[in-house]
Image (tube, rainbow, N blue to C red; front, side):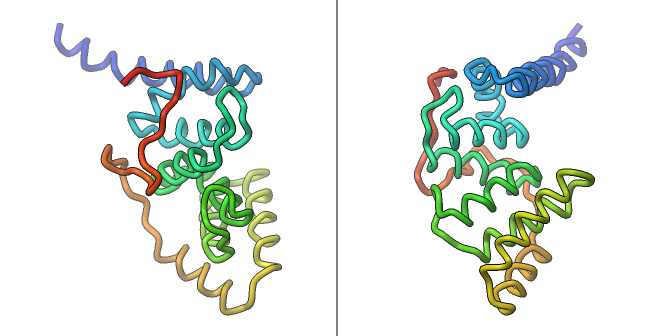
Length: 172
């Protein structure tokens, strides 16, 4: 009987991620935020990336670049390509993080290397657009940072410098 309970948690987690992703895809952002917030709080990299997008654009949550950068960072350090690409674009614009083309290049380069097809082309195009604003030495530094980067697993104590995030969709 106990073994059944152990297997139920990952299934419920997968169901919540599927529901949140489906709601996000169809533009039901309030429902997406509600489904994804508990998963993000537990460190799910995909949920973190999608929730970051909701906060960045004010879809289903108030627009908040700082919160978006926090979510993207937490997903990016775990190796989620979408979170990495979006974090790179935040650095390119200076939204929620300092303007930094080297870090923008690093995250976009990592994202492009981790996907295939249309997403790879898109992320590479974003990376190349950032590179057009950089010197050869800056590009080399961005490449070095990407080459030396290693994904880490989620740590509940991982918090961005701005402190914990809040959502109206989860209880503490």
